Length: 391
Length: 117
Image 1 (cartoon, rainbow over the protein chains, first blue to last red):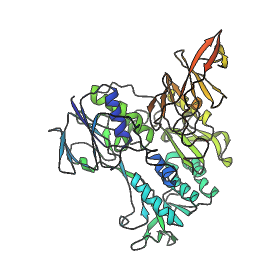
Image 2 (image 1 turned 180 degrees about the vertical axis):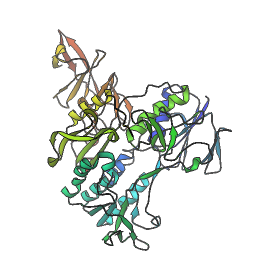
Image 3 (image 1 turned 30 degrees about the vertical axis):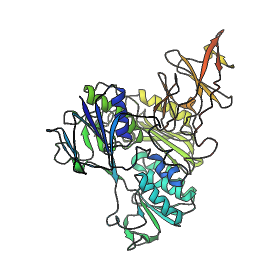
């Protein structure tokens, strides 16, 4: 393999590009990014960077002296993949022909319908999104966050620290039930009330009010919550539309094997746009975790270069969220759990460790504080075999 | 020289934090090697002694930055700056650390709350 193109210049694309070089690929490497910035770290975009406490230089992912000897193309989208001719078409009308391709196009935040031209109505995914939101928060007084997931919660926390009145609206009766389960989701979501943020659960959003600029959020029950800034934290969809016609299956992420290989030869996919086969779950799954985007680059690179001989780590998924001065850590497979027990501290003190089990077997762990015990549990989960759920 | 503890008290796979200024972490790897580094991630204030040791690599317990204990080099982001390493020796069965005279590389947030609003 003499030429490789990486589509996507964020964590997954950069990690794969680094791994390709680490694993000995010395051919021509192109990296196409639809961003106008060099690779940067996204987690601070809802926290320190949004608060104005971290700079663009501080959140850069590359070291100052790093050089992958790659041909970087910024501000350009991929528009089509034609592997019969090994060709990638780009939004500037040019194309790149390469022996191998890495698909790392990430995901885009969902918006409420009809809000794309409404001033003050934000989503948060990119550095530019965060800057634009920061500008609005600095002059705003009332923020409504639609969606009580981790992004929404972190934005609420940051905005509260900047002095805004904040309301979070969540359609589900059980906030964070997906990632944490209903019981622990309720515990973590109670941080909002602790810090003077109102959380409305079990009420859908009808739409946003305002003609040029947002004035509020209209709820499904007829109420309107006034707002001069709104953030929509209602999930993402993988950036795979451009692959229509490529022959790749991508209902919710590009379907890959357990090592990132797609159904097309010499094409791998990694990060938020990819649904790898997960042996622990017995099905394909699209992880949106930062750690998955970083760690799987090495596996995808090995798949591309040598057909997937790179050791696949047995480490369970891990993610964290920093909000209201606390770090929330989670590791494992929530889908496998049928019980959860607080084993250290107390949820009322916002200082605890809880273990999720399937039968008697631990399958996941959640902690606020208790970092040392949390790490012990994470290591223990890595050696455990997760029993497959019988559907 | 900082006297850490008898080698027999630090099993392979274990770590000992030493409260000097700034604190250091002394690792005994599963392969039997000893390493000492500053006990603070260069990305954000977190104790590497609480991290995940695998081979000669330590992963920060919070945001998963990885460092090579042999050189201090960053193996994986979000950290970009290496950790400071110290020389370790075993004298009469006791672990000693000679503290580096290089300037420590502390995270931007050290001492002040940062990524938490």
